[in-house]
Length: 632
Image (cartoon, rainbow, N blue to C red; front, side):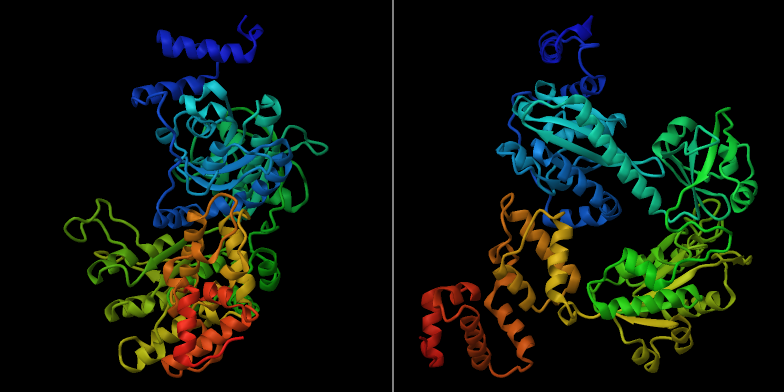
């Protein structure tokens, strides 16, 4: 009978029952919304309270983007395509993390609602604790798509929102966040939910592919024809280990998450080698039955990384890099192509560069492009761990090795990297005594835990990074020369940001990536970024762009004054001018050169030149007089 009542009436009756009579409105609205109302009520939220769309701090935003970089990478294209699809219908598009903080937003050009535009900004806290009931928080809590319209929002102020959201579940079964579409007008319930479901499914498919599985199989209902399903996927390693399952497969198996080791035979009554032999002989599909009794046909899915035999035969390094990675500089790309080829041959890679030039990003990229991409990427910063602890971190310890040692012992980073990549950041700061132990591991490919005498065979590829000159350190006795030869299979030197050959386009691309295409840079702002000296390199650039995006109004073009003060200060411009001209000179000489350059760039317009320099017009005229510079 409830279905005969119009949806708007059901929502009003549900709200009346819950808020006025203290009753559970069973059957009137989605249970997910009722559960959210109950949580908000238990947290003593007032339905009449004002909504404040608070953003995280600048540092918090940087950490947020870094911790969710895999999700952002997987969601980039699907989010862009969803935005293009729904923009004309007045929908704004949002990606949140599992805590409800906005990672990316695409506001509709047809949306004039200030509340919606204020909410759909990167870094805004849209958690249930902050804004009450929302489709995103319900979808994450219930692990399913949810539609929340108008009065179904807990807070009165949010009645202008009409939202549909779908959770994003990673291959290990963890909810990473949600995709949401929102507009002021009432939703088309079926199409809205279908759109967010399709988008989240595409993101989940991207996440499966990013595992770089040795083999991906899809489950289908038919033995003949093309009955495979794109959302019933199992990602497998070379020995049959389950790397990940799509959400639909988890529903079939009853596995909410993959906490422990799982192999192919744990799911099916077919041995993994039988599956491989069947696929190798092109007998597709392969019939297999789950231990629950469900029967499926298994087909291979081309992920771009699947191989036809246990021996991994990958595309050429140049081909792999051109398909997936852009380092913003042809010289770097050429070096990395060589480095990837060297890793394929078993040579270690040494990354050289100043702090902030992107050494860890480069190491991660090399791992993803390598033949051991399906293994773990294990990183350790040798400069960040006290000398007394780093040995245990690297080599692990046996049971009872020392007071406070974990019962049963624990593997070190080297063991954890078995079958994958070990990244030793700032290796130049590794203690000498530890360098000797590391050298032995590299020579014997065996690791022995602290307190143990039993070595264990390990197989990993090594990437090291440092900002130091290791050759000089070796000559001064601070670094073992024989270890240097071991880790220096191939060297990749990452240039300072200002030394990049295409700095202009690199900055524009970074801005687009960080803002998900929602921001543009004014010419003044771009020029200021190009002229700055960037002592913190790429890391500082990311901070500057994030700072500008956070303080600019929604939809506003990023201007010079949105950047941090240290970038817009006149002294900064002078530094940039010194870099451009290549001469240091006296302070007066530098100041004169900077003013000349600003006037030239602004066609002799004193007002615009003063604005470019970040000083007043009157101040610029005083400097004319002091430097005896005549103006037109």
